[in-house]
Image 1: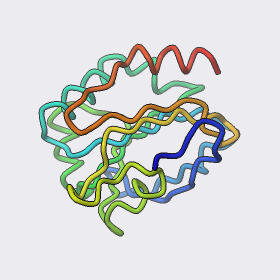
Image 2: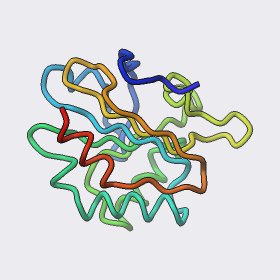
Image 3: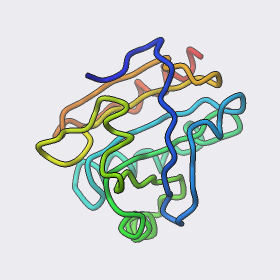
Image 4: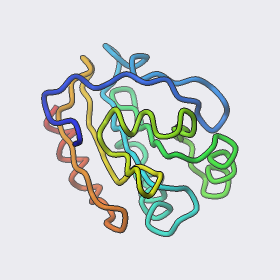
Length: 152
């Protein structure tokens, strides 16, 4: 079951598309975080969602907010995906141990071997303030993220 509003967000340590280590705790006290889990790079709905975020990036990556997108793809795949789609925000690899971060947030689908579409807005103190979890085929509405961030 996915974590809920009011829960302390589980910390994680994942590699981004450049092989750099990113920890959720790196942003505590500094930025709110939009943490987005998605199934796989190079798939239709995921590409559409991540490109929509790219197109609205100033809302989701600025002095007050950090966007982190997590999939079970390897960092090497994520690098090619980021370059191909012009994605300049961190794409984090939950590749090994496979799905560990997704499991911590309750969004990893064991049968499919990937995370479903879970989004968590985490405040500067590391507390989950908004969340939505959609199934694999269901895209998310970016306007909902914007409203949730404005409420922080």
